[in-house]
Image (cartoon, rainbow, N blue to C red):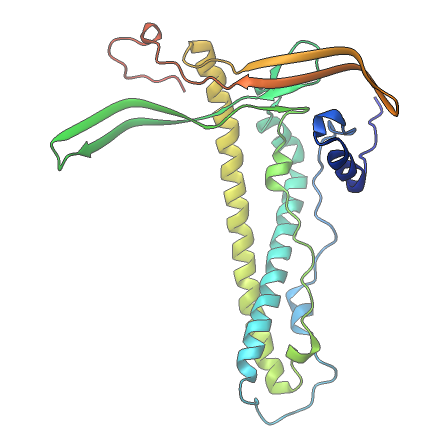
Length: 288
């Protein structure tokens, strides 16, 4: 089935400002699935270290304050390069395992459908803690709880299920070359520059891994939280949000007419139910 093209940002922005409410201006292409993109391979560490302010001379040492300038510029330049390189490598890894990730992180069965409408509802995200214990009043009161559920994000309307690519795929672009004034001009400066760029590169690579692990944790939290919501929904521990549809055969007129228009609104988020009927008198096993 052909997919309508994505309108340019200017068109979307003009429509939003023109009509005041983006719901009055449907955006085409909203159901497109993102792809793993990472751009071209970023420059290597050696390429960044080779940056010079023209031809370097032998020199006799560093001018006062010059080491600090080289340190700040080299560290920042190297960090940008390390972050870009690590992110590119991670995207290449994701591309190799794309089919497996599509299977493991499939949000499709978790979203809530409303008849034949293209409008979907991304369910709330529910977190769970077990065997929570708390003390209060200087040790005079203790509280032990077998199960603690919390809705950490409310339901949202969408045109497509969440996709792992929007969580994990990042593109930081190429590092920006520093100005000529801060690049090394002599061989001694080049030695310092190479050292500082390498230090920054290592920090950037570390940051890239930390960001990826944080994104992966957020992805796992969301898909597990949505799955937990569906389990609790079947157990009668939570209610579905209330969604109201407004159908119009035709509206508008003049310069624009809309036929078969449908607007959905979440009018009530509802939430967890403290229904004693679904819980045994002594609760030790919590629905997960």
